[in-house]
Image 1 (cartoon, rainbow, N blue to C red):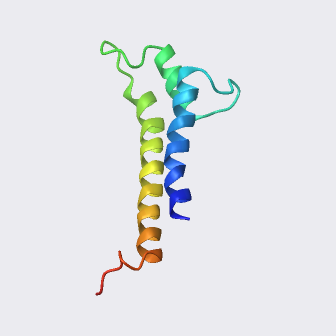
Image 2 (tube, rainbow, N blue to C red):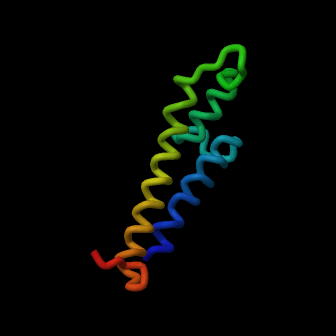
Length: 87
């Protein structure tokens, strides 16, 4: 159960990376596709940095992955008796 919860961030990063590289479905609205569109419009260039285009999908990917990592650690602490602390 814990390994399943901890494998979700890897899948999210893999999907967004593949979509960013152009290997995803061109009609599916994904965070990687949003970052690719920002890259196509030169939002990453220092001369016209458009942070409002880059920040939402980047933060969404980061927060979703961190949420699943924290949930995985909490489940592991509940399931594994050696990790439980006496309070």
